[in-house]
Structure formats: C-alpha cells, structure tokens
Image 1 (tube, one colour):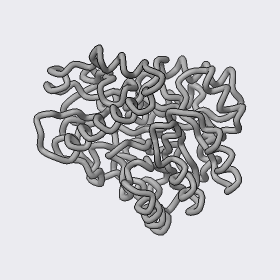
Image 2 (cartoon, one colour):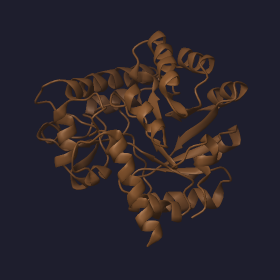
Image 3 (cartoon, helix red, strand yellow):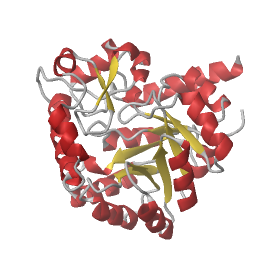
Image 4 (cartoon, one colour):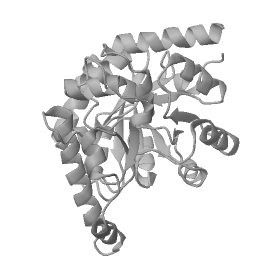
Length: 322
C-alpha cells in the first residue's frame, strides 16, 4: 500500500496518532509512542496549570524521538485556552488537535509558528468549515470513537469526507487491531487516531481497576452518557453507570438551554463530571465511571505501549501481505 499522508505530514514511520485521552494520556505514553514509530498527543487539560503544561512539553521534547501533539479544547468552557495556546506555540509543539469549538484562532496562531493543526470533526458541514479556515487535516470522529463520539459510522464518515474535502482525513474510532488499520487505510484514510487500546498499558497512570475493566469489558458494554460534560461521551457500563443512568435530568437539561447561563452551566457540568472521572480513574470507589470506546474489544491483557504498537504493526503487515 502507498505511504499514508499522516506519515508525510509528521515524518513518522506508521500512520497512527495515540489519541489524546483526558486523565489517561501522560508523558511516558507519548514518549514511548514516538520511540516506536508513531506519534501521540496529550490534552492540555491533563495539566492543572499552564506552567505545568510548559514544563511537560519541555520534558517530552527532550526525551521524544518524534513529533508530539497537544489537544486543545477551543470553546468558552476552557478558561485556560488562550494561555495554553500561547505556551504551546512558544514551546513549539509539532501539532495541535482541536476539539469542541471554532479552531480559527488556533489555526491562525499556530501557522505563524509553523505548527500544524488537525481538527476534530463529526460531519461534513463542520469539516468544510475548518478546511476553509486552513486546517492541515481532519480528525474524523465517528460513532465508534471513545470519549466524545460522532454520529456517523467509521467507513461512511471517512468516505463522505474524502469525497468532499481536499485535506487529509485521519479516522478516529472503532479500530483496535492491525486488521482494522489495514481496512481503514484501504477505505481511504490518511491515518488513524487510536486511544482506548492504550488505556490498559503499563505506562498509563490510571488505576489497575480501570485497566482491568478495559480487559474484561467489550464493545457491547460501551454506552453514551450526557451526565459527565453535557456533551455525549462514551463510558463503560459499570454497575454504577447502570444505576445512575446516562441522561441528564430535567433540571440539568433546562439549565443547559438557558442562553444567559449556558456557558457557566456547561463549565460547572464539565468540572463536576471530570472530578467524577478523576476519582474513578485513580482511586478506589464504587462510583466507577470509566471513559473508553468499543475498541477495548481488542484489549486482552495489560502490556507496555511498545508491545501494543508492535502487535498492531505485525497484524497490519500480515493483513496487507494476505
């Protein structure tokens, strides 16, 4: 197969981005990704302050063997956005992945510093918009993605964007094996963004219970909830998630529709949800709310990042050869 465009965009060996995962992604995971032929991105919000973000970028750039990216939430709920953008540009990260808002300012600022910008999109309308703003690539977030998933299936979304957009399309969601990588690239993807299969890695900072959940649960156990951030988000259907349900209550829905306070309610909902995720990810609690996507179907044991990547490469090679 021809070399995927993502390899040329970032000068990497294998066309995979280790997707940015709130709370889960850490510096060790990103560094290991770059040492094994792929790239990785980390959410800016995984750092509590912009000073910690700056220090983290410096550490990663010192130890990484390839490009590193930062995921920015670019809507008004992220009160640190402008400072995060400035710090990342000053420290010269290799690329941004933008989520949940207009990337116009990020694109304009990043390009002045020679930094590429990839934008999360879930439909053609928004894809065309960010393309017109100068995005370097699209992250096609499909209905099988972990976290904030889209509504269109993996292949359907990929074909829709490839037929109507001219910039590279990186498929995000539903792939957890080398066979899936081969199929998605053959369908026209210019690369893939993969996250959930790396949660159960030795380097991930989350609890053993979270990692074991990714091993023991499967695709059928993934449900969508609006209770965490107000935006639909995929989680593992643990007994606690089944108990509390996955829909916002009437009061929450009413407050989110109020134009005067919507911004603040969304921010409060996000902070409350993220605290619940943090407690479950790192501590012992029966209130287990763990983010993951259907690709945990392919997770069978807790392994080092290097071993996960090596397996993906081997499976991919076997599928291409056959």
